[in-house]
Image 1 (spheres, one colour):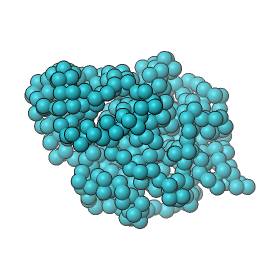
Image 2 (image 1 turned 90 degrees about the vertical axis):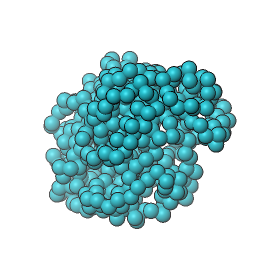
Image 3 (image 1 turned 90 degrees about the horizontal axis):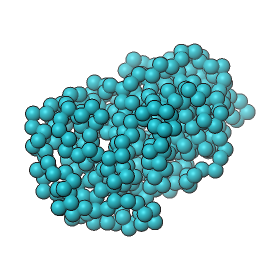
Length: 444
């Protein structure tokens, strides 16, 4: 079932024109709209379903700069800075809590990887470090696991997906942005080599700039426009518990599961690295591009064939702008794949075993979701070559909620013609065509 996310009241009327049209009302699309509206641009966000209906409302809620890929580290630091100031910025609770986060282990090889990461990150002078067994026990005294070490960041924390993006959406509208829900984008049309209008199920809107922030659906929309975007996806499962005693105020990642405290007194629990790949024609076509990622995660993935091959985000579909698109089908409005009951049952059992004080705590809600990924697990953030006025911010590979505000900030700067606060070359769209994708890292 779909997790509960605060509803946002938006307008139903499509404006005639906008300076920028954003496709997708997840965290990246909404923060981009917020930052562009602050600059005085006329922004319209078009969402096929509802604000934060998919991964922005289904993720674990972790907000961390710890154990990031070297390519993403600057973006993670920028995003955490934005998260810290977001509630003050928007004048409402954005859900962020600075609680500290850690990853625990008994594996000396994993500790060696952490130490290697720390050496690489030394120029950033990040707070925190590796804890020894006694320090881990002091931090999480209720655990029954004899962890030998942990890597800890006191600056990291979590944000509640239920309230975060909806609160930012309301702030964007208060600054002049327009958000239209249940309004799928069918495509766009160009004149003289530049985007001229976006076509939706409710009509057209004139614009010269489009930002595609459609999460797992981005590749399908871009393919419709003749643009190949390498994107795959893993179906994941998460759940939340009933209210229970506090065992740690932040989040803890362990080899089997990760959890973080919630504002309702329960915990959000995710199965670390585990998921299901549903075979599809698009996935098979692009399989070679994702081979390194597959081999890295092959022991944690299962494979299946289901209806998603025909109607999911990675199906090969075609349509005309003058007729209905796949995004308008009922199941696609808010894509709601089921949770894996075996993962929920096993995860809850492991959580209770690791923390005996939680004996008797039950599962309050479980849900599924699709985590979209690029071949190198680094997002694309920036313009699309040879498509004047088109920008893409997608492929966040499970990291989008945490680094979404930074991505929105960078896209806003690029759209506005400003110099970006951090280098964006590593996120460029064309790196895959150039055969210059990044090495795949597996820090967490």
